Amino acid sequence: MEKIPILKMGEFLLVTIQVDMHDRLAMALQDDLTNAISETEARGVLIDISSLEIVDSFIGRMLANIAAMSRVLDAQTVVVGMQPAVAITLVELGLSLPGVRTALNVDAGMEVLRASVNGA
Amino acid sequence: MSTIPRNDRTRQVSALLTRNEETFVNEWLRQMSGATRRSDLMKETELRTQCSQFLRLLQNGLNGGDFNFQSSTWDKIREMLSEISRSRAIQGFTPAETASFVFSAKRPLFTLIRQEFGIDADSLAAQMWATTELLDAMGLYTAEVFQKSREDVIRRQQEELLELSTPVVKLWDGVLALPIIGTLDSARTQVVMESLLQAIVQTNSRVAIIDITGVPTVDTVVAQHLLKTVTAARLMGADCIISGVRPQIAQTIVHLGINLTDVATKATLAAAFQIALQRLGVSFVKEQNGKPNS
Amino acid sequence: MPVIGAENLPVQSESDVVSARRRVREISARLGFSLVDQTKVVTAASELARNTIIHGGGGTLLIETLNGPRTGLRLIFEDKGPGIQDVDLALRDGFTTGSGLGLGLGGAKRLANDFDIVSRPGEGTKVTITRWK
Image (cartoon, rainbow over all chains, first blue to last red; front, side, top):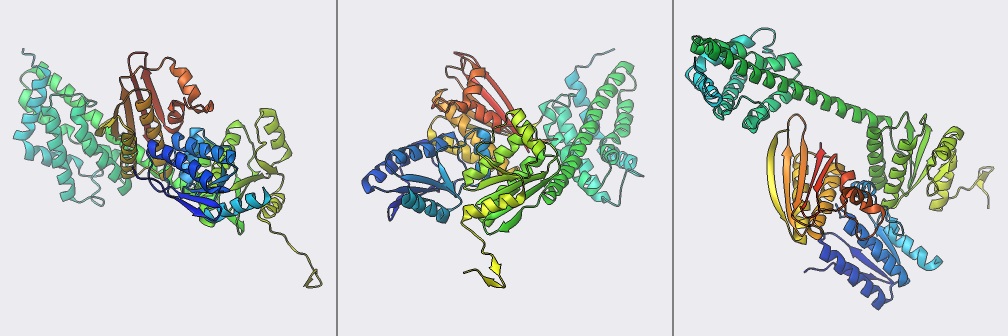
């Protein structure tokens, strides 16, 4: 099974989701990220979903879980680049993903992460 | 007096049409001449082709043994009629002219049926009645599709008007404003929501000010729509500020128990703009005597 | 409402969920649905497909293209699983509880124009959703 690559950028981890994930892949990402945060002692995680055309309840919950778990490991999570159609659909679905920080794009997301590390 | 089984009746009509194909089509075209013909919109050859096609599908349907237009036997002809109605709606035919495509076929068909079954009055009556029901259903169907096509065009035009009437304005690098004038209903809110979110992505704006000064009333439905827009924008990484909240609207919101605690609201667009700039870390320096204060 | 196209897909494994999403996307795009409408119907399909596998033990998806006078896309998810005890409760609990149980039904219903469900304990489940253009 292919895995979604996790890149290290200084004290942050960067994940770009570009494939239509099946559930097992999503679970694997959740596990891999948690391990990676722990191993690298990362202070933040940036998840780029600008290529994702579908975010259903499973993926939504995955994002919320990642945010929660990284918080326990003292890392901040930011999800960036959600497409308008996806956002509209998620709201209609009833998912507002509280507890998940969001930003428009990678640059904005990195700003948020840097600010959270410095300001904490 | 013989009672012919229904299946056979339809096949008999079909066979009748096969034997008299050319006469039928010619007579049908002749019926369509005159005011309903619209030779300005459609050439004779094209119309003849449509007639032949229709005839073939009609025969197929009849061979399927069914006079009931709602059954699946008639799927293909329904498809063809849909196509014809839709294209004629766009070309500029009237509903009557479009339906006459089917109705004009009645006279030549009945002439044939009378010639064939004229001897047996009961049989004749049964055939004529079944055929008229079938053709009427087809004619009505074309009218329905025609109507729907026209409605689609109108709806699209309305949507375009809506988009024009709710322009998204860039106030500053990273700040958008959406002044809404008029009532907000479901359809309009969809359009408005989508164009705002699109604009957020395109302009990379972190703050969107939704100004409702021009919205006469805010009820639970409108409030829900606004909240959905705000939530969607937040998921994308942008914050919304709702401005132009008049005292009466503030009262209504509280009265209806609408929860706006997570949303920033301001009385004026100017106040909202100030907040937006603060969030972006932008500040203005006031000049004195043409020189900036040091 | 004439059905001018019908396609049957198995919904047994999680790769079937991905296939279902892809196929519904292709068809709704071909029919000319707006991007938002496409996203809604594909997401609804994803929710219902997952339900069929997790709660229904696997089943089938029938994709029907509807035409004349209106264009529409109908998805019928069917399984021979245990069925749903209390459909009303399932619809309500959809996502508000936020628990892992979330049957996805409520969400799918909100994303569709028409929604119908037939389910009885021991008799399997059949969910039909339609999205009109």
